[in-house]
Length: 212
Image (cartoon, rainbow, N blue to C red; front, side, top):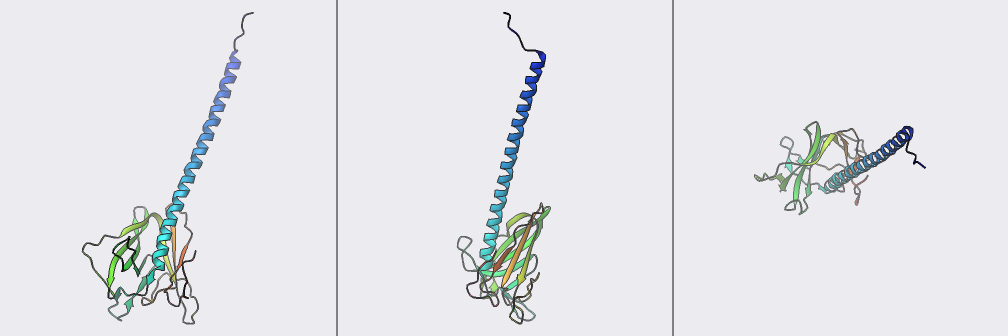
């Protein structure tokens, strides 16, 4: 008996089924790759947020009521000066960051490329004055690629009640009770607000630490 071959219709049908199978496999692999990429990006973003917020929490919570300079007009000691885009205070520097001891921490939000970034400058403080170091390093970037970053402050009212959030801290001779830091990435996604209680802030209860 003469063997029967494949008809043209059968060949076309097999080709269509093979193409459909390959397309499905490609779509599955592409979706899996995109999911893995998104997961990796989310993990990287989460790690970045934790690192930045952890560092800020420790530095702000370590703020001490030490003067780093004296205002020349009213002779008010400057212990904590804050605005929406800059905050300055004194805290002991860990040995892994320098020589240790009290240092002025100068956190600033500045324009960088298409967005903003936060930088940190450190200067030694001695006897209520900032020591100018000719070999001092320039401010170092703490976090980049931001749409905005903002500081806010909260202290006590004259009635010893917790006041409203302020964009500027004007009681330079006292530390606020709370400092809030908010960020948003250049794509508009906001970070969870970071709220830190300063244990040595004005009227802060003993043992009060960072809050989230």
